[in-house]
Length: 422
Image (cartoon, rainbow, N blue to C red):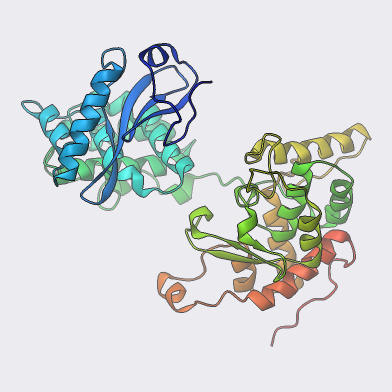
């Protein structure tokens, strides 16, 4: 592949490459200009640019209608406007909307260019756009944004509200944000038809009444020691990542994205930066002796900062860790055993369910709720309480995680070392 998905390519794009590339990805040309190729083969020119101190993306059309030379010219003009204090993104929308109302689809594009950069996690940005494109655009996309009313919102939401409640709830909020942007930008007037309070709340059942909560299947407490022994006998980087995940009770993505500069083995401490945390706050993880020994025994790959690296040096995939548990379950079933099943649902346990196993263990052992929730990096209390609660109970959590490690190894049976609360 002559081009790499990097911000500053070793070599600029060529017209021939632009017209023939089919592999999904982002192909950079310089000056913030890149060609985005989607999985369905669609191609679009996009420019990343800083406008009045804010990072934005501007769509510049699609090849072959907009050839490489034209895209470069447009990108250069936008850059010049921005450097002089202008707003090329606002100019684009004003020109497009002149003489006719914007459609909802056009508002989605404008909103995403202006606001999605505020979502730091790339996966979450893609999920935001994907849900709107799949579920909202088929119903609202071609409608003038001014004409969209509550009836149209119901037509969009009702097919999903009971069967896919969580997704539909998020979709409503995203459509509300787009329509709010359209109102403030002068493309529509009146109340927001996607608003919940005093509007859709009176027409749709509360999400809590219809949502079907499905928890991740967890390893039963009575099976933990056998599960750990089984895992310890398995080789491979994914198996070691799964062990580390179990010992630290963090999420899969936090383990897979761990880099050596986050870890201080001398202090037995792993500091996960806020940018990698679901709640957007730095999370300190006390490392047990076993966890430190596991880390020190790992090989390191030149050119890769990842602790648990993939064969080619990148980040391990989520599927690679899940596959370890599937193979463990398959081995048990092949031997005629039920395997590692969730105590309630009887479904095979998955990696994320280990956090539920840990949480159940802390409750059985009598550890304070707040301390257990801190270990899981969950929000605790109200926003006011979180403002004043700065401590993360690191030293107390260190003792708790050591006891959890002993339980994993089978050195401490359930019911041993119960914490007595004053």
